[in-house]
Length: 502
Image (spheres, rainbow, N blue to C red):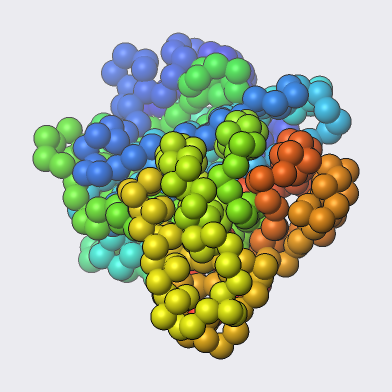
């Protein structure tokens, strides 16, 4: 049995304890000579994978996230990004004052095959004058069922997890001299006392299937477990990792490597498949889970049922202020939806193309802002089709939703549109008051999770309000998404009116 621990003292989030200095040298997972290393998979092995990067650096607040988007594994991609978003919301709402703060989030693949994916999400935080911290968690994906799984799915059940925790505690104590009362919460004497006797020896030889629902229930029960950051090592055994110093990449990270002979009997049927996927990472063939990205636009990868989201929408452009608006949105990696006029798209196709290129949604607001209630059914359809053609010419992507000018519609216009009809639940009245302070107040006080906020990017006072709107809502933990992303998996029906996500 091998163990690798750093000589640097890390800070642990799950307990206010610090492991003593150990004799084994090294500064990263598995770098000590002869020590098993944590297996990871290069993203390039997964066909079609992309890495989405978001960053901001405003007023002393720095946030950086990198997460994968895997074609054919949307639930997995969504889980990783949403887990990061949950952590970001918690970080923002817990921030003290306006001092310097930073959050860095990354994900790396632990395993990849045509039926299994695994990822490790690492987070490093520094919030004002409080002590910096680091943490990591893991997520898994069963492509045969399309289910996202927690770390507990690797094990046959709770007894297997308790046996593993006891073994980690024993290694730390007997082989590394770490006193039981100095081990992280969930290890030490409590882990040894709670472990079933001979769990590995008594495990049935046939693989045990563990339902996803049961795995998630167990993960909730064991929330904060020191085994949450678990993967596979080069020798086929489990590797349990612990956080390191947040200031340096990989610095102070430590891992306990367990023998394959001990851990193999404790694995579930899915755990066996995950082991195979992890240990085959050096093969040359590409992993292909199918489903190339849709030409209709980016696939949403944030679950707005779990985090507070808001869709900022801008009508009647593009205009002379739209470029400045795009700059302001970029400062926060915020995504918005632009309900554009066909005539304006023809005048400024480069601005529309830029907005689409930067991840914003371009949607249909008719050709020249005619009231659709004054048109025949054929007239409505022709107007929207002409506008859609201009949008697709400028962006390469057809629009997915529409908004009627003046918010006016009738049965005829609804019947003759091929798009979901997106209204709003927060009206800043910027077209009427042209007052930056009033616009800001409405947007920041009336927005709730799931809101769609109406602005017009043709008015300078509106654009002047946006930096404060972004800062205020971001401090409240909101995530700025497109309309399509706000609704996620909800099937939006043509001719149906939507005012917000409920």
